[in-house]
Image (tube, rainbow over all chains, first blue to last red; front, side, top):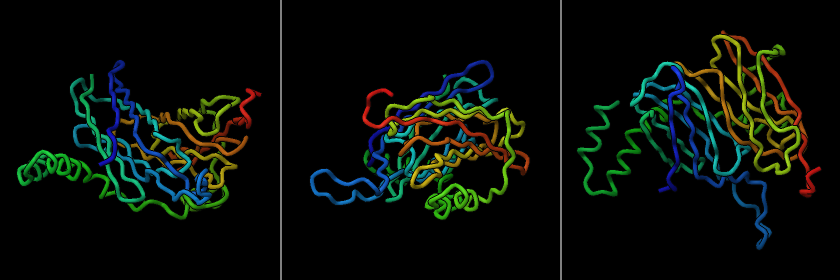
Length: 104
Length: 155
């Protein structure tokens, strides 16, 4: 299984500020390996979804142009402290990961 | 969704499989998504990428702000923040116009999610970073130039 993600969600007024750090090499498929001179195959996160208490608040498609170890920040109006935030991703090789936290 | 997750957990035995089961249960929303937009992401120019996304002739908007460095010393990690002041924003798309594949990421916002996305992108060279915002069935756009210094002299 892929490496763990880091997730944090805090309330600022009536808006939840969610920050996620995913661990992923995000290879574009254009980079050459320094030793072998061979192209490193594309390997990147394609789909990301976020839910709060089971309701989808964000879904995203990523290309290989997102930086290595992608960072994602977004803001959701309405949730309360203690609501559960879950973020999932899936990459182009079918690997998946998810992380969850309670809004603090 | 929670009931399903319970069942998945109940059916699993051993700590390792529990982790897998949690992922499987929680990943249900991902499966419900439309397929990854291959045409748009593999497009080699902004026009084709927009076409792949179904965006045509977005209107320039001053209500969209793009926060990114004027000069990025490291093109591999360029922080970009897009804020849309347009009411009813349901989508934010980020493109780096001169990248080999300009389309970086396409975000769909629902529930109470506000018109705000913060992330980090790769840039091959100095270029416009463009944001396309979808709101109320219309498209709006704004762009900001980011200079990418190569060689690390801090330009």
